[in-house]
Amino acid sequence: MKLRNILLALCMACGLTTAVSAQSDRTQSTIWSYLHGLEYEVKAGLSIGGTAPMPLPREIRSIDSYNPNLSVMFGTEITKWFTDQKRTGFIFGARLETKRMTTQATVKNYGMEIFGDGGERVAGYWTGGVKTKVNNSYLTFPILFVCAPSERWRLKVGPYLSYMFNGDFSGHVYEGYLREGTPIGEKVEFKEGKIAVYDFSQHLRSFQWGLQLGASWRALNHLNVNMDLTWGLNDIFRSEFKTVNFAMYPIYLTVGVGYLF
Image 1 (spheres, rainbow, N blue to C red):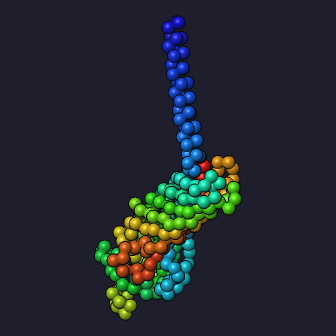
Image 2: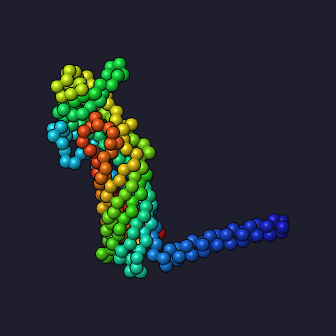
Image 3: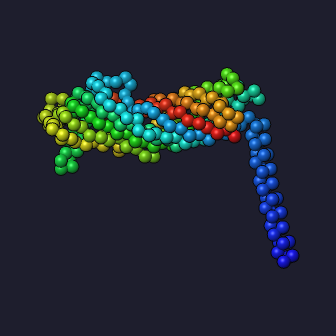
């Protein structure tokens, strides 16, 4: 009985020693980061926006409906401050994010490639209704300059690089007609509820880049409220893809919170 108590006491002592050592390591790591002007933040947020041409081309006559769907973001950032006063610095980060939307539009002579009833592809110029679904997932790396005009506010601006690891740009056309090959080609009509689907997902560009502009407000000692606008600066489609004859850019606003270490 005494032997068991001795062994139990030894186990508890070892556990306590390990916990104290781990806590000491974390404390030393925090102190080291503070002395070297480093801060760490874990972030999450929701995004709203769309993938669209800017400005709207003449082919798009009207936007009939828009659904932002649910776009989410999870990531982490490291801030390196230049001075002890923490007024200016750089942010390096990584995040997983989705950029989604569903729209319906009325178009005229809109470049289109649809699937026929037998699965064949028919390319030409579409006039009528178009429903488009975008659902893209990215691994994004922002590189931002940050300044702090006050203890609670931080302003950020800089470029980002994104790798798209899952992409969907598809939809269907309805209530209109397709001119095969050219704007004066053979007319194929779709009326009375008849639709034809299209899918441009395989033509999406894997690497994209753009500009990020944002602000953070220190709500609590370790809690930030963040807002960031990202604007893509290169076409989401590869350069050899000519069916859609204008560039399209992802433009999204993300609002969320971050825990600051």
